[in-house]
Length: 413
Image (cartoon, rainbow, N blue to C red; front, side, top):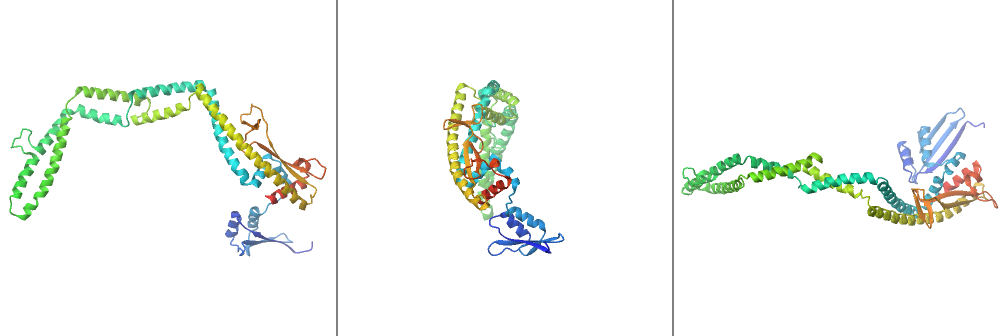
């Protein structure tokens, strides 16, 4: 009262707070050599205010953003957060660190697999008739495909083979004419020497010449002769395969008809039919509703439940140990918050359920609920003074005391 201005000033260590560091950098503020920065707020009597950060004038909103990154404000409304059981369990897990993190990760991994097996067993048991019908349809399709036994790309190969067999006379004429042009007349007619004969004659003329330039052309003609010989041999082999065979054509056409029946039903081509068959076999492996398959799934479920219980027990033990240490640390902090006689206790209890719970698992002979964070219910208890019974913190503490408990927890963490 009576002053013209009020000042609030603080030095903040940024540490590893990335959000705070970004705000300071964006504002162009200067950070001291020790990694700290000074923030200042001045409010005049007329209500106007000014803000500075690291020696730079900044909007008041910048300090508000910075405070959200660096300051934890505790008031009586914080009791609502502390009343949530999940929040109390999170406090223990955060305090315990790796002692809880490792078994919790293992527990969650096994729990995911366990839930998947339970769901599959339930689905197979409740949808056994429907799945059996689907399996029969898939089995019929696989039997039909296996009977034909198509090969990858076979439909394309058959199409080309049919074209050749249907046009054998035309192909033979073209190949025979080409072979005669290359190798000469089949009956050795000297008047039809073919390209090989003509090249041979040209080679003889050149090799008999005394001119060096002409003689040098001889080896190139030899190369051409070798190439033409190879082409002539390939044409001869091709002609040998062009014997008209009506029986073979009929057989290939029948095979093509078998493949077309499959492509009409299952896919656009033979490769697609084979892909359908692979997918059908995979789906059928998950549709086995026989007693043997269900028994195998049930066995796997029970094995996973046993493993899950082992991880849940490790997790519970880690939380119990951490709860004792955390309670002692919070109690110690509260002595400096005008609650010297108060004492905190933290209980870790397993939530007992009956067999109707779909997430029930047996731990040390008791059925408990296997939730995503374990099987434990955590409760924060406050003994307000010596001789007082431990009660849930929201029942034993006033609003102001509850906010101090929150502050003590924050300091410990």
